[in-house]
Length: 182
Picture (cartoon, rainbow, N blue to C red):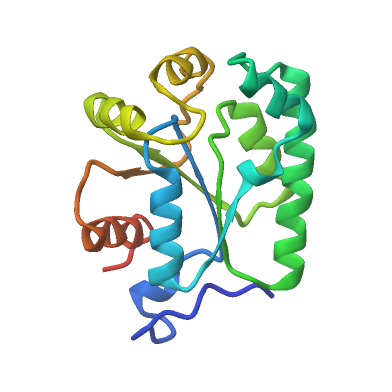
């Protein structure tokens, strides 16, 4: 059985032991998914898996051409993601997965395949996202982010982590609090 990560000062039955072993952070470009994922992994004992490292060649080409992904591209990619999550579960490694996952049907497909995974939408105020996108050094700038944001489907059935520029300690506390921790 896959167990939650071993946390410092975490006793069985304590609020901090309630963290799920598999977490999927999703949200808009610039919301801070990668930052939060790396931070939470380092502080809470998870491994971090940035799923953008597994984008298909067709998706990479679309990015290079500043085009949105097609439904076929997304479907192919999320089959790969489903299999990667299965591998992590089989290996027994508590993991935080990071990927925008803009479509609700893909999140539902992953949840159906892996009922124990917890989805957390990382959000930030529009002005914070805008500033982050201006200073990024990768392929997602403000214009491309605006183009792909039209495809984002929010989810009413998930937890939300606000990443508004608060301290790292506050972000960790907010995350732990989503699962009934202190």
